[in-house]
Amino acid sequence: GEDVEQSLFLSVREGDSSVINCTYTDSSSTYLYWYKQEPGAGLQLLTYIFSNMDMKQDQRLTVLLNKKDKHLSLRIADTQTGDSAIYFCAETRGGRRALTFGSGTRLQVQP
Amino acid sequence: DADVTQTPRNRITKTGKRIMLECSQTKGHDRMYWYRQDPGLGLRLIYYSFDVKDINKGEISDGYSVSRQAQAKFSLSLESAIPNQTALYFCATSGDARKTNTDTQYFGPGTRLTVL
Image (cartoon, rainbow over all chains, first blue to last red; front, side):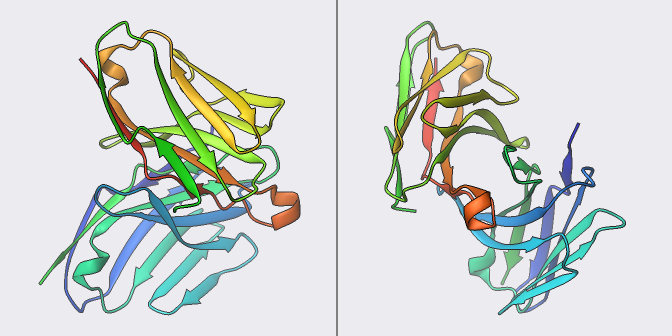
């Protein structure tokens, strides 16, 4: 079956770059997403990438997709304390399938 | 996202009670979803609905039922609550990917349910 895996925890210093990694198993994945969850809140879509793209940049966020290795990463430049949250990657093939989420990576930003 | 609302936001109940969690959306989306979140396990899909007459089980549907009362409303019921159903429950919506070109889901704020 489909599986999405992430490391559980990442700690960085304010101003550094953060890189959150995700691997998935479904080679038919069409859309891949990054969601952010702040404490006590729901999930907020950060960005998404189509499987025919290698990279997508959106302000401080850079998404890299290695389709051959089924590896997705999210880089946050100049990480701020407000970036502290849980980050989820998710994938789908579209059509009648729902999203499959990873277990989330807790990002802690130290001042 | 204020376009997706969930009620109640918090609920404490006892084992064996019937509980209903409600979700409403004003985004005009056809698709709605119910997830539960447990620490370290991420989000797991309980049920999803692609339109009013199309309801599907997710990976952990046992002990739950749903009702899609209208395009904008999707409720989740626990017929006889048990302690291991204590979790954070999220509703989400999405448009039809064939029309929107993406399966982006928009989440409600969550309902924290505690079963004693």
